[in-house]
Image: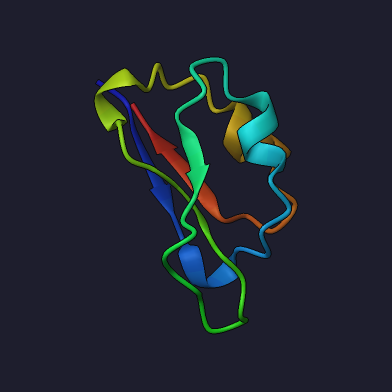
Length: 68
């Protein structure tokens, strides 16, 4: 099973990761703000992740790591 790690403090909330996820499991955490004042991206249903790493590839700020 794949695991996605989000370094939330680096996230600027651009939402690019949301647009490329084929499983539509990446979300913006609207109940949380990081130190930069942005709502960070994250995954709540990790068991649905297929480890494609599209999210990590498209992220301009190296927020996302994918472990397989």
